[in-house]
Length: 250
Image 1 (cartoon, rainbow, N blue to C red):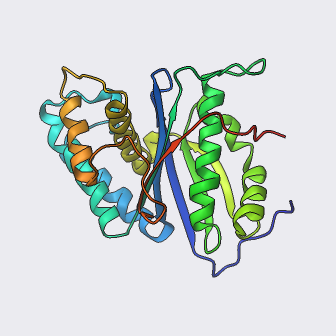
Image 2 (cartoon, one colour):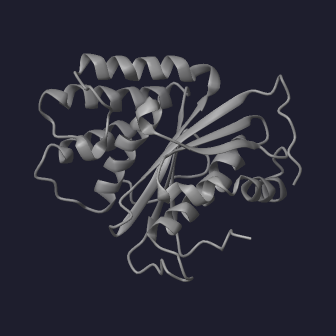
């Protein structure tokens, strides 16, 4: 597929994603789709929440211990769902049952390979499908081995999206990893995805994480994370992926 330059008037959209719990029964990957014109204001707001909350590094599900940071984390969650409610951002999540999943179907494959495959499905069947006809998409996934492979497969995602969903050619202009320290929206995705994974895996927290996971579910307006949302729910989609995805690699 030939690379084509982005039309100067074509609106652009960024998707910031992260993954959680590849070593548990259910792996969850997901993130926020944001119009590029809103990214700066959203980043500034998340930075202000960190500053007021006394968080020197970044918001991170695995680092959450409650205490004097509880208010800042809950405000971050509140802000995430306020953005969704106002249609200023959309949350797209894929849930895959990794228990019993053959992560080593080929030599060199592992759980990171499986997460890459799930990112591929999410980029194709949600991000490209929903936005690829009208926007130039830029995907930023939290840096790590579980995102490296898919970042080398932008052409394959775009080709499948063009064929299956009649998107613009090369609808995903860039597909790269990004350190979450430099992206508040990835930090927001990290917290939300981590909370969803905790609930889906029925983790019984004795720490404040359990309360934060409850807070995320309550703010979502859903009864539970255990079933897929309808395709019409475009600003908050949960997709339970069944089985092993088709091999996307050439």
